[in-house]
Image (cartoon, rainbow, N blue to C red; front, side, top):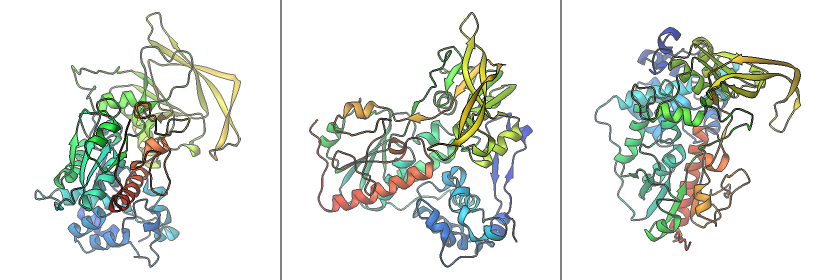
Length: 465
């Protein structure tokens, strides 16, 4: 069979009316048929292409044998977030891209199978992970996003006492506040977090390291090492006229209000404007998440304003297809230049300029060039900026010994993920800037390995200031 088994999904008409998950997952028969397509290659290129090194042919073989519990434990041995990664990991540019099946047909649907295994395993009420006796060594993890959770997972497996310090009132980081429920239901995130708690992980909420507690405080509390996985939650803006008008949001604020604070509910304490004509600036997954969320909040028309062409869109193809099916309008080769307001300070329209593509720039993509003779004004009452984020500078400002780049990202040793402060490690978006969930998890795993090696050599975190 050369073609993969497609996943069932809600119809566009039904899904834009709620935040219910769009993809419905495989049924058992679907999974068995898809698993049979795996060739169990000798060289396993998919494993090499997986940032966290999951034994992909191994777990798929167990699925084909209908041994789902065994398949789950193979995945969980390498990945702390199987149900999450099965939904949001860009497999199409990683493991599936090198799948030998793809030479003559479509690659094996590795992501769909990973999701199926995790969901099927968690449907059982008795799910508890083995509690590993402590080695009496304490590690502090700052941030409960994918990097922090991945690091915690591997350290727990080695017997460490792990404390996670989370600034918000709920764990998960970007998985909770950034990715909408129609792509990643929050029950899935809570379930994955609970699996770590079952293993003995302690999560302390509403604690901001750099304000509530300092690195010096953590040192005095007896931690042998610290891992920083605080992500990149500081939004970027363009510096164009009108960005301070009422009805202009960063995608980070907009999605956090909706996903974490339930701003879409009547009487919400942190409401967002329910614009009827919405423009989202940007072309990544976050931009599409914001656009599709605005549609579900009742917008009658939603534009994606992107300065390059469709072929340069950085968003996942699946998300682009879903957005088009739902009626999102893509305005390619278009750049916003100004946001216009009415007499009351509310957004009224945006002024845009047409772009053409020139030679490739440092990113490897064609450089967009303005054509000032071709401009247009589009009536809009809400603008969402989704052009990227940078790390919050609070921790760096509070810890002068931490070295950072000009963009605010922590500087680390690429092999160990150790920062400029001995026994303080970091990974994920706080190091790379905005990137994918799976790359943050890879960094967490790398740091956990280095932490274990250093602590085993009797290194200990000590911070004087």
